[in-house]
Image (cartoon, rainbow over all chains, first blue to last red; front, side, top):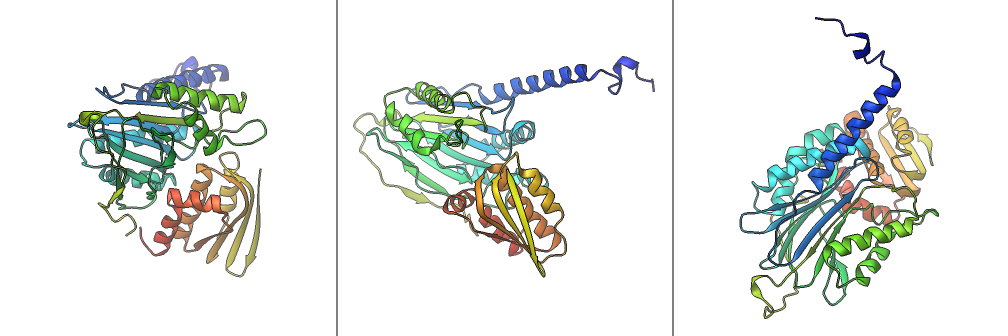
Amino acid sequence: MSTPHADQDPVRRPIEELEKTLKREIYQARNIQNRLLNGKKPTLSDGEITGKSIPARVIGGDYFDFYTLPEGTIRIVIGDVMGKGIPAAMLMILTRGAFRSAAGKTKTPGETLTAMNQALYEDFRSLSSFVTVFCADWNPATNEFVYANAGHTLPLLLKANKEVKEVPKLNGVMLGGLYGQTYEERRIHIEAGDKVFFYTDGIIEAENKNGVQFTRDRLIDVLLSHPAQSVTEMEQSVIDAVQAFTEGMPQKDDITMVIVRAGYGIQGCSRETVTSVEPSKVGNQHE
Amino acid sequence: MITIRQSRNENILVFAVEGVLDIFTVDDFDAALTEVTGVQKLVIDLSAVTFLDSTGIGAILRAIYQGQDHGFTVELSGMNEEIKELFDTVGILRVLEALQKGER
């Protein structure tokens, strides 16, 4: 075995050089995460979908993703790993791997979360960490929207008539919290023009210089004030509103959102309006 | 800023947490937690908590796991409506209940 040359010995290298290397590697990690997060969006013949994540630090622990299933349904996921920065980012990548692996092998969002929890539990438990995840299947042809929840904030449903409410309540334990969890599902029908706004708490907990939070009410005001916007315009409006509110204060938490706008699908304009919510229990979440 | 006032009555230890429990203050909570020994119950009083984020929830989760590993129960008290709703959303009350019932 050869002895390391003096300038290759990390102990002898000047601190500035080590800092430079660390900085370079962190920015490379940022590029990797940015590319993985903000990759290709599904191509739709009708309706729209977008997603954006802005880390509070160089990299972050928020996650969103889209997975197109063979029949054209889009499996959407949004998640928030406990903590911030590099540790959270490492677990976010683990979460992404679990989702990508589970999405193609499971039939429903509830099954996806169940499989993800199974894959992630041991690691998250040993690290005393967790990730909250909301997973939904949106079929752009029929506008059926089926979802399951592992401890995440419920998305907002913006009706075309300007009404805003959360999707019907559905709670489940965060991933990594309990071994062997199964996740209940709910099914709703969304109408042409309706938008679904998925988000992480970095938006509503953004603070201004007086320590006042942006809050869900302000978020709803922003969404209501731009009803005709495309999903990417709406995404930008939310970012602008949060930035205007915080007035240059450092971002405290990662900010992530996914927006879906329902089109007319295969049913066209003559489709009958169906607004009832039918819970569809496929697992015993609390047993 | 966080303050953790500790009081002990025989085998019951109370952590009265005041202020913010988040990424900037969690080390203080964890330091107090690592010193917990020889108790049957740890009561975490959250009535004076003004803000708690996912890192704060992680700290509570660590207390629950430590209780499971070291044989003491954890009781959460003084939760305001906001914290109760947050705990209900993430499922931490369900984790506490399940682990104390002996589930894995």
